[in-house]
Length: 370
View 1: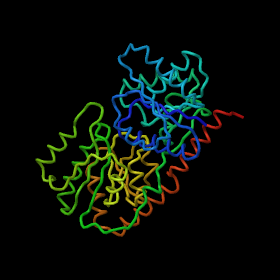
View 2: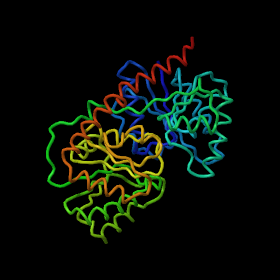
View 3: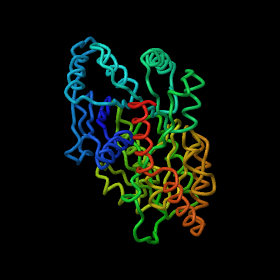
View 4: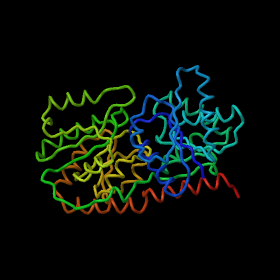
């Protein structure tokens, strides 16, 4: 099978990591795979691709009226000759589909939704516009969680036969706990790019609250600015002026081995998002025997079973986060059992092998309908 992934950009984040992992898995199963990236200046994430069997194509949209952008996409599709196209954003889907229609190419086209739902009135208008045309064009829709599928199906009335739910998959062989070691300092982890939807200010408020009750702790914060905003510097200045300055470590890491090393040092992982599809970083932590405290948004309740492999809290509730952290720090036996339960959850529901098989099965049925 020849599969073409299409990405709007190639920053380093959960979506890009997922794409590369899935492409590598397809290659290992004997399928020819290529990745088409629209923003050629954003190549940081290309470093994630360490498999020379994956073909990489770039096209640059030079301005909003760059009609040759469509022609360049078409030429790449014509060169690679995919049997199926897999777009990972509405933007990627829309322009790739126009390129197809421009010269009447009949190639099935799937889109995977990453976010739980549109977050603003403007995004909602874009979503309405996109779904109108995608239905006409016969798109196949892939959702990453049940809650996400329910929202889009109800809000935009997608046909059930055109939708499929496939959870994200983690490389459970790579993200596997090695020698368990007792941490002298209660270590909290947070891995996410810095964007408003991640609401990291709530995390810092929770840590200030925690610090009034527990002194022997530290946070490893892994992330960087995206989307042209720079709140990371604000975070650092805020921390420097607070009582937390000696307890928070800011890191910018891209290598998977480095991420794994950080996860191996954690007691608990925290994500404070106000919206999520199905986040990858908590799954990687859970695969390493690390329980999670997540906000109960999007697909997060499908990852964490409250009290079994972590805890769920409401968005913005920094006091609840601080309370759960304090409770786990004082109950090491429970913390250890929750960590084991966390890995068991990933093995049962979120392995990359299971994820890849579901995608390949879907693609096969679409290419060769009965």
